[in-house]
Length: 389
Image (tube, rainbow, N blue to C red; front, side, top):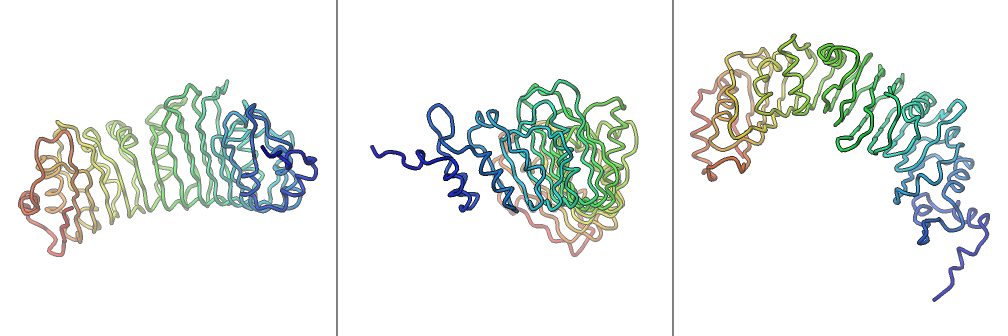
């Protein structure tokens, strides 16, 4: 067997060699012994050296999760004057005891990192130290216990894109509450599969939103939380909203009116058997909607839905409708298609698509049968094109 010549070189010489390599090749040199220790050079040394030499883009991921608890990232990473983009995955970030300063950082991606017991504070310090930050992603998926109920403030005057993912369904971690204050924010994705609370303000520039949350719990009444969030995002132009979020809004609608989304033109929403009853009321809050995509998740015995109310958008602005996951010859789907065809005078396209549901006893029907079944309604718009798929 040949001897490992490189591992016998001094660490200082290995450092100089690796600094001449691209970052992706640097990571590839991380050869691990059976005991889990990195040979010769530790990654902190070359990252620290790269930051000192003025690196602009740093993308680092620890493939072995057990290693990121052994050593944390070098502290000079909090003081880089040249970093423009920073992506850290599965690493440890210590709480700096000084003011973070990253004057050129525009893109920051933090995923599955370990922050000790100061997770929200470390992230807040990083955000506060980025005076030109435009794109922020925080993905937090681990089972590290945080002793106190934490609150993460995402406050930035420059932020345009924000993605927050807190997927903790199977974890025992105490939920995090999030407060977002970003007046220039244009796109936000908030995916939260735990009981975290979200609070928003100053989102007047919000253009597109992906919302998947149950809104969580706090000292406020649940209806106050939901009302405040919906009011805070009411300026959005395009929105994707999950089934479970709509179910919570459905329960809220019984206690108070849904705030108006006057600027919303595109909506993609997932409705269950329970929340489908909310459809007319929710569309009533979208008076200028032009495009609607419905993803249906209807049970074997769907609830009877009342479609007598016709919202303003259906009669005045709605031009394109897509209805996905319809069950062939299922009464709810037929009723829904007829509802739109009979009440939409300016509708240009209606596209129902079907799924072979295991809950349906019907075999696939020929397209001509489907046309007869779904197009017995009188189309109010002569220009409407129905495309069945």
